Amino acid sequence: MKELFDVAVIGAGLAGILAARDLSQKGHSVVLLEGRDRIGGRTYTTEAFGDQVELGGTYVHWTHPTIWHELQRHDISILPPLNSEKTYWLADGSVHSGTAAEYFETVNPLMMQLVGDAREKFPAPFQVTNTTESDEQSIQDRIQSMKLSTYESDVLKGTMSGLVHSYSEQGIAQLLQGVSGTFGDYSGFFETASFWHLVGGTKRLADAIMAESSATVRLSTPIQSISDNGSHPTVTTRSGEKINARFVITALPINTLGDVTITPELPEAARIMIEEKNPVVASKIYVRVKGEIEPFIAFAPAGKHPINSARVEKRHDGDTLIMCICSDAAAIKADDHDAVEAALRAFVPDIKVVDTASYDWAADEFSQGGWGWYRPGMLTEAAPLMRQPHGRIYFAGSDIASLGAGFIEGAMQTAVVAAREVAAALAKEKD
Ligand SMILES: Cc1cc2nc3c(=O)[nH]c(=O)nc-3n(C[C@H](O)[C@H](O)[C@H](O)COP(=O)(O)OP(=O)(O)OC[C@H]3O[C@@H](n4cnc5c(N)ncnc54)[C@H](O)[C@@H]3O)c2cc1C
Image 1 (cartoon, rainbow, N blue to C red):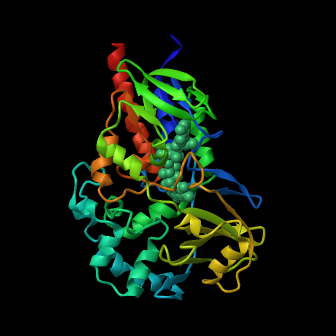
Image 2 (image 1 turned 135 degrees about the vertical axis):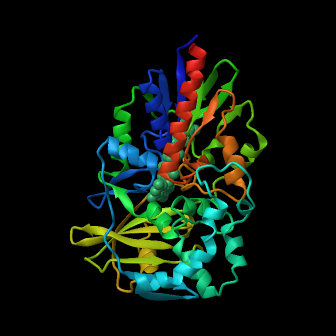
Image 3 (image 1 turned 30 degrees about the vertical axis):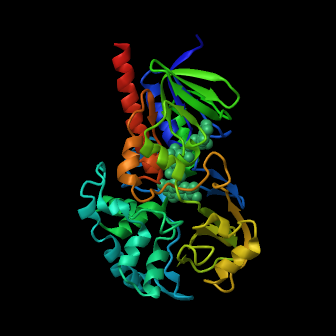
């Protein structure tokens, strides 16, 4: 028989590389199989405008325990963006402006109405196992039940537009759980999600984790199928190569899992989750604009403007870099500078686009979407099922995480758990 690895880890995003490191450091033989020609998955530090930019997952926080532990381990610090006081918001058909304090005066009571019961619904946010009534609701269902004016509804929707592609397809439960995780404080949750970035970029963290790993790394090796015969699973690559291991950890985006044949078949609820897919198909565009403009933040509800969340990040060579989240990746093309300029001019009339940088996560076959967000019913039903071992096949990744789902933190938490469980299973077997 060919070489039998202790573990085959599929997918070299943050989940896969962390699981591979932890297991290889315990002395197990690990092969890490990655479809792309790089590690990092939906995090992607690259160069644009002669500067370093993050085209995927970026923002982390000291209240994210797993990533914070890794950042301490590797002596990597974090930084905030430029401070913005000026705030623009599109609501009820027109753009309003004011200070951040004025904006949040309107937002705070609305958000309290939306997620004020977060801790009651998720008293132990790390422990989500039972189906809850709120998991059946979409964000839209909850907003509708609040009976708001169009203005109020737009303000509320705009505030969360950096996380939302579709209010009706994304469940409210993940938001409630996240807010519960920041002690019921929604502004704390938004800060953890969208503020502090890594000095040196996410690539620096991924490289540091890989430097400690002795896993055999196979890039440009897309996987076609995983088959578990009960004694060892076989992973088959698209080129037909068969790789055998005692255990497999599948750390793939949910939207790509449907392209991989898994035998025996997964339970029905897990199959439905894979078929229905993560609904988020959003994009992030960095825009270099002429001159050192006044720092600002801007919000627009998903579906009502092509750029839904924008913030001045930093200065660059006499110009300004703006980070934009487009809730619908199809609504605007990053390389259409006129369209990007027109969308930003709705907020700042005289803005002049110099250049843009983006990555099409929806078109990339190895992601087929953006950050993870559970559809109604998935957080408390299908996801816990996905986190159970399926024979000798274990699952990890941000899209099936409990606390921290959709974030780098969630990816890393699932990796720690999968690595621990597989190490225990290997220890039992080797006894
Ligand atoms: C635009 C954008 C902005 C984001 N912003 C933030 C943020 O600010 N903060 C934050 O915490 N999170 C953010 N996220 C989410 C975060 O990036 C992800 O949750 C996290 O990186 C996912 O890690 P993962 O390891 O679970 O999956 P991935 O990073 O997707 O890794 C999965 C790996 O599997 C590989 N793969 C896929 N199919 C196959 C196959 N058939 N065979 C072999 N390999 C395969 C992929 O190439 C990939 O490397 C953002 C995501 C996007 C897209």
